[in-house]
Image (cartoon, rainbow, N blue to C red):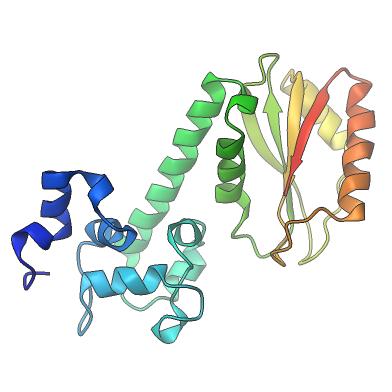
Length: 216
């Protein structure tokens, strides 16, 4: 980093021109601060953001979104990411979750559909097994809470409508959004997903709670 002229160094560039002038790798380099023996921090950042499988040693996470969805176990396998760097990256992820949760608590979730999808991705996308979660909403469709209710195998999880109804009543929810991940990467709903949505919609209608969406 010291070999770069001052105006090209990420931190100085940010202060002079604002964060929008920096690439993803430059922003990540500021967070990482230092590289490792034989590898500068900008190179390390670029390798972490490289498409999966393309960086040296298979370190690429496929961009910022992929990196932020990585688990501690994923990060611990990367040479050059010690405990301090891993903790900082996980802290950024948690801050992103909390910032989005605040937005969803302050306005109807239907006003921020993209925020809902990103919020769910930050919670579920990196999981190796299926996880079924529910976003419980108030009468104004603002977020009350997100709860992970069921976990399953690599390709299957069992969902019990009675438990979903009980948690909806516990939160005094007026509506909710269902969400689950597909570890296979397939984002299209299956026939089983559609059937589950209909089953839960019918069960929750009995207690006057609406199902607004099912996010995969």
